[in-house]
Each structure stands twice: as structure tokens, then as C-alpha cells.
Length: 285
Image (cartoon, rainbow, N blue to C red; front, side):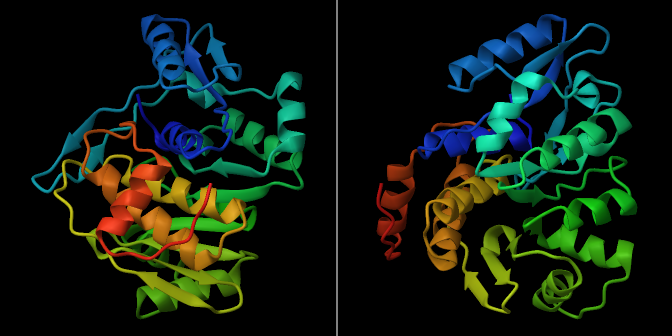
């Protein structure tokens, strides 16, 4: 079980928040199994729709010698056909944050549903994890997605790809991030750098960098999602951008040292790991 949104909501819940996944599975064995696994992972399935026609989405993942995943995104699946339902509206009205990406926008149906959901949650912080997957995005989708966001999470390779796709000028990752945040109405950009750590840039021009941790990498599936979840858990609970970055970076490193994206790693585990690495942090429950 995986996918960026599933990994993100799983981590957010482990850290003590209340996350809900909106998706759609097929009326098939995979769909039944997905619901069972989500329930075992502690995720509510109230907003997981069942499609009578399209199958449950699957994504074959192949790891290279460094544990870096390559994804093959299966087209024509149930999550391409998510619809807006009235039962979602109370949830959206009280949401503090909505997390979304570009993959869900590869079809008009789910893309329209996403923007309807965003419109129904005016007070929620909009967190975009760009997650550019081959043949699953376009420049207009990227542009509209960033315009709708308050916070953009992007990795170093995607930032360079964004430069190629849009012609945004810049000679360094920091320079590119600065150009993006001055071009779009963003409050903050979170850029993950793999083993080199991560940095954030705010709309006020504040740059904060946190170096990477030395861990034995099993695979990196879900590590970026854990970083996003760790960052947002702290940020939404009133911690400084610097503390939020440190916690998210540590959470991502710990997940890279496990197999898959849904191994149980608690908030206490992350804090203990940071203390072991002599990282000072003052995040309290």
C-alpha cells in the first residue's frame, strides 16, 4: 500500500494529527484488500469511493542499486474518476490543510473534483507536493497547481525539471526556488535534496538549510512524504519553520532506512533519532 497521499496521511496520523484520505478504488479484489490494509494502518476509509467500472490503481516500483525507486504509473484506474460528494463538505470546512499533487490531475474528472474540494476549504492551508511522474503531468497542470498552493514541496530533480519545462531562470537550486516563490503566490517552498538534506525558502526571502543524516538506506520510497508530513505536523502546530524543517528532514531519513513507505515510526522515534544525532529540538506533544 502506498502513494504519496496515503504515505502522507499515514505519517500525519502517527505524529498525532487527524488526516483523512480521499480516493477511489475499483470494485475488485485489489480494492477490498486496499480497504483492509488502510484500516490496519489506522486510516479511515469513509472517503474512499468504489468505482463500478475502473480497476484499483497499481504502480509497479523498481529500485536501483542505491534504493532509489522508479515508478510505472498504470493509466485508466479508479482514482482517475473521483467525484465530489456532499458527505465531504463538513470535513473540508474544518480542514486545517489540504494535501494534493499532480498525478491526481491526469484526468479531467479527478482534476475538476480536486479544485472543487479546494474551493470548499477556503481556510485550509494548501500543500502541493508536485510529484512529477512520467506522462502524468503537463505544464498547464503544474502552473495551475502552484497557483492554488500556499506551500510547495519539490525535490531537487523536479526543481531542475521545472526550470526546463517553464524556462524559469536560475543558476542554483536556491536561485530557482527564489524565482518560483516570487512568480507564484506561495508562502513557502520546501526543497528536498535526498542524502544532502533539505531547505526552505519563505516569501519573506528567509532561507533555511538542514543537512542530511547518515543512515543505511533500505529504500527511499515514502521518505519525501515523511519529510512533508513531519514538516506540516510541526508547522500546523505552531512551531517555527526551522524546527519544522529539522523534524521533517529527520523523519524522511528514518523512513529511508526502512522498507516501503508505511513502516511505523512515531514522533518519539523521530525525536530520539535527532537526539542521538545531537540535534537540538524543542518540539513538545
